[in-house]
Length: 119
Image 1 (cartoon, rainbow, N blue to C red):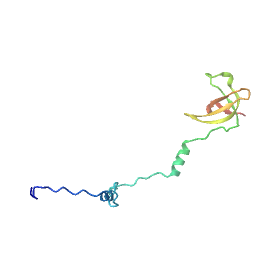
Image 2: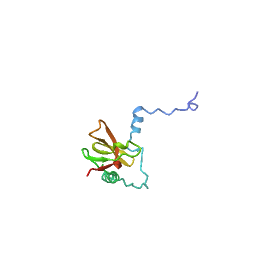
Image 3: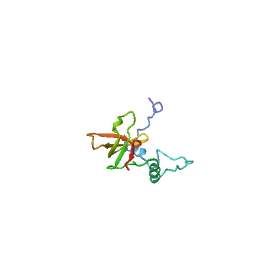
Image 4: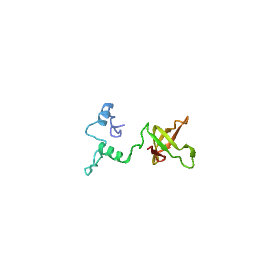
């Protein structure tokens, strides 16, 4: 074998050279293109204002006495004066309330549209 017939293999890079090349500050994995356009990001205050416009508050408070008008499908004798015990989240369009009549041993769940202020 002569020296011309043997091909030289490229030398392997040392581990430290590979690591330093991977974390080199000159090479960035994400570079912005030259024609990048900045995007307007809404502020936190803007988000809060937008959400508060959409959200509305409960009409009645805990402890208030209200008139409950039951629908014809439910018990017709359930109508009368009730006290608001707890505010519940909305069920679609209406907020819900847990109400209690002093003459009953249990509480009911009523939609806001079924309640009126007692005069």
